[in-house]
Length: 317
Image (cartoon, rainbow, N blue to C red):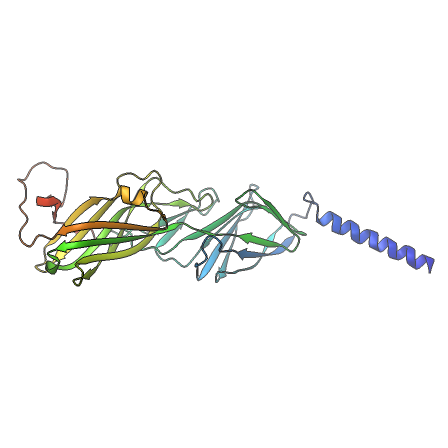
């Protein structure tokens, strides 16, 4: 009976030692050992997000390691298996046909940008979400990682929490109090303001602008033109944001007019939902008087009265 008690005490001592060692952050694990972890996406930064799926990259923090990629359906997350080690993790939604991903060979160069058409203008991209964990340690006993706010999390069950953030803006354009709207067959808006790219690990936007194009809805009832489209947030240190209206009149003539909308974008109370308003506009109903031919640098556009231009080359074609 005494011997059984000694054996029981010895077993309990071993068990306590194992538990203690697994909670120790400096535990050494075999390099090829795999650990199954559960990636949980928390949408506190975007409660209404409903992506069809998320792509997750694990980049080894040591040279020569293998990059691991997983595609997870839905918004909740899922289970993956990777070798123990230290990683940088990047996650983003994979359901946007209008977004191009590049530089995915390393976490520092991974970038998202709008897909540009032949005319140099992108269409509506949809809402991009991305999240990262810069220092993740995976051991046979669980995971330890640092959240973006600096807090360190440790989970023996291998639960990894990631909070993707929205990186896009919705640009809403309204042109109201229009005179001559009856002469308009179709209209479109080009917004030169969205960033041309964003780093997925740091969420830092490019300072270079891109152009977003959208067809406008014509409302004769209240004499307005409206459209909404989604692209990346405005370029870093935005200057000279331009809204270009293009119209095709009922006689087939194509005209355009540009507006500086920098102040409206920079003063927007919600960077995710930007409203641009043009109040009072007159659509010419006849031929636009054009200036004499000269050695101007503008190719394909002749400027007439009241800021309207006669489009020789439609930038949408």
